[in-house]
Length: 302
Image 1 (cartoon, rainbow, N blue to C red):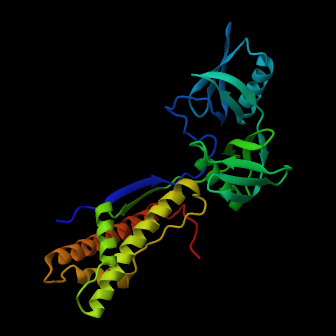
Image 2 (image 1 turned 180 degrees about the horizontal axis):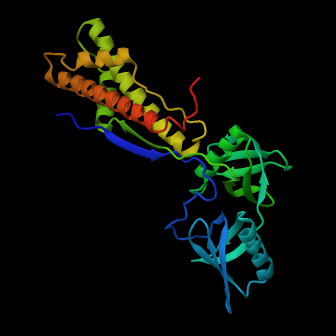
Image 3 (image 1 turned 135 degrees about the vertical axis):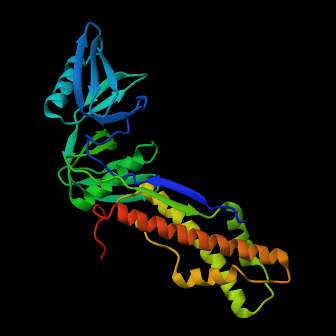
């Protein structure tokens, strides 16, 4: 029996509102700088403990030379329910609070896979987003969606290079979609590649079908993996569609019963064909379930 294909499940890393952003829940705060909304402030002889709407807390030490300024920013965040940049040290120690800016991003220019230049409507200069931290994918997706919607975001940047440290939506939200697809197992991808490079003795029509299905098997696996990577890094633009053409599916079904004198070759052809059919049918089912589940949230098709 052919081995079942690998199931890949991912979530669109699309932006959500400040109240919905829960990436800090259950997560130990690190030295990263985050945009957080202060929910509660508790002062004692050692300083102030700040608790955040997104979960978690941090401690601002009284011995911090900028304690008064930081505490004032914390109170403003609490009173207005607006985010403030919070830079954490070890554990839950707060090193600094940073005033957040608000603006509409107008353009994203990708310099490389790990560097994106960001332009804002009301701010001079070119801001920079680097892909060297886990939050970069979420920030990139949020900025892309903000550009598409012409929507405002909160952001904090580090001078002098205007490097973006964090970004959050300013009063708007995008739903999170969970997506599952199945992809071919590696050993069958290797089998398909072997078929493409083999000299197969059969009729020209059968040889064309075998090579067409083997190539489609490889190409569609690559496309699914690319789409999943895009989901993680650029969710605002990701396109999800059924990948297996009906005519290719019919060719694969015919190859499921093909017979060759060479049993090893027959086994390879049938294994790839069986897997192609199973993956195509399962992904079509998952795609239809996805559209049904999110039909009220997905943008209309053109």
